[in-house]
Image (tube, rainbow, N blue to C red; front, side):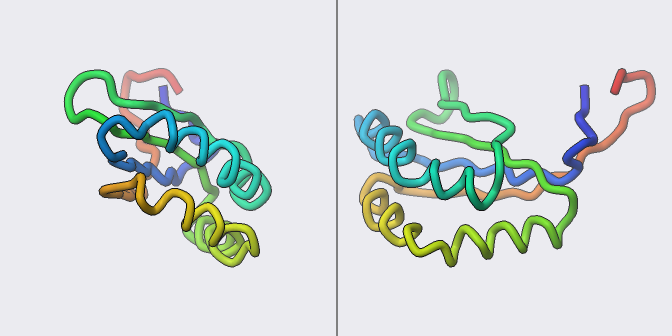
Length: 111
């Protein structure tokens, strides 16, 4: 089922250093989440890897369009407390993948 209420999604995956996921999740929740909720709004969800590449944390945020994405990301990136999160998490993240994906309707699939 495709939720077209937010047709553009930021699909972001971080690879976390071996055995550092609990520390990363604590830092993310304590330092990043208040800023993200204020600037990006509520996320579509969070996931950690179970099968396949390990030590990965994925989160999805929905946007109305590219202009909405750019405006809200600029608010996040210029938030005065964001550098504190970046400094606290930098040693925990070994890689990052960011994709902007669009909702697509498929014939015969409920919306």
